[in-house]
Length: 329
Ligand code: TYM
Image 1 (tube, rainbow, N blue to C red):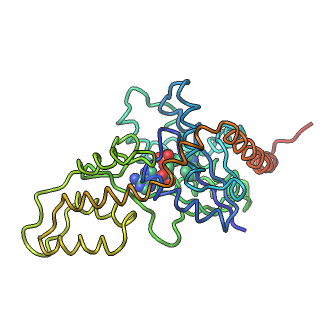
Image 2 (image 1 turned 30 degrees about the horizontal axis):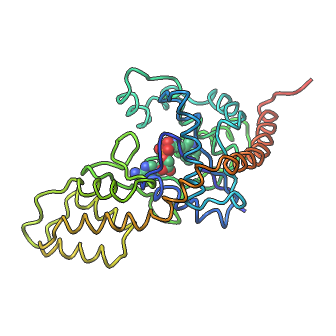
Image 3 (image 1 turned 30 degrees about the vertical axis):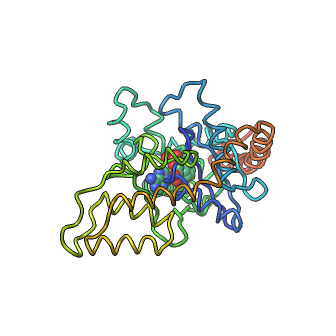
């Protein structure tokens, strides 16, 4: 059976981008693959979270994973920092990761621009830690959104390089995965770019209906098409993209037709979109709250996950040490 690995940083509540870029596929894949889904708390340290916030954020993502339908009986669900083997494998991979290639990654350049006061080495080696996460369980498939494409490319490079240096086929070369479709990019509501935690434009699974309506009604639009069949502008296309994931196909068709006939009313489009997002997130909203309050359950899930993930990771480390040439006396 093929192995699947993916993770999400605990930097706040999950938004629709996380859901449709990642979690939706986790749910489908847990039935058919050997899955490892984790919470990337080591990675979140690159942005220096306050110690008093870190654990709460991890708990929140764990509760959201479970409320969305991840099943600890089907998938191994764990916390990244519960696996010190990941840190050791990162150190070993770092020896064959080169400054130039790390400095050239788009996400490093972007982060360095966004947080010039904190361009730490963890940001630079972020793709190496991510490669360790993935190959430590010998993943074949990695369900992620489009923004992770370059990181995945780096993982493939590091896995290939390890195999070449140590003259082995030890690590499979993992593929980014979305059931044969292109990787997903869910846009924000601010007219341009993707939905993101740091972009501050997210609609969260936990947002209540009032908040969702307010956010959607404030979405950026334009002055509207003036001639039939005008190409759809980016802000409106973004609303259509959101509609394509939460609404019925005929609803989207209706508004697209209205657009091409120049009779679209953006107020109606937004109202419909808001209601469809509310209907979509409703079943998760209450569950998230209930599960987040259930300490004993969360602890149990994290413990079971840690044990299973540890068994896989420690076996890999033992074998990797052997391949590299470490020998015990
Ligand atoms: P993170 O925490 O930023 O995002 C988690 C997942 O959500 C997806 N995503 C999106 N997909 C579509 N549209 C969006 N607007 C959108 N925003 C976020 C991301 O693509 C991702 O799949 N580096 C990773 C975490 C990570 C990881 C890994 C992932 C660490 N190690 C190993 C896979 C495998 C990250 O920061 O994702």
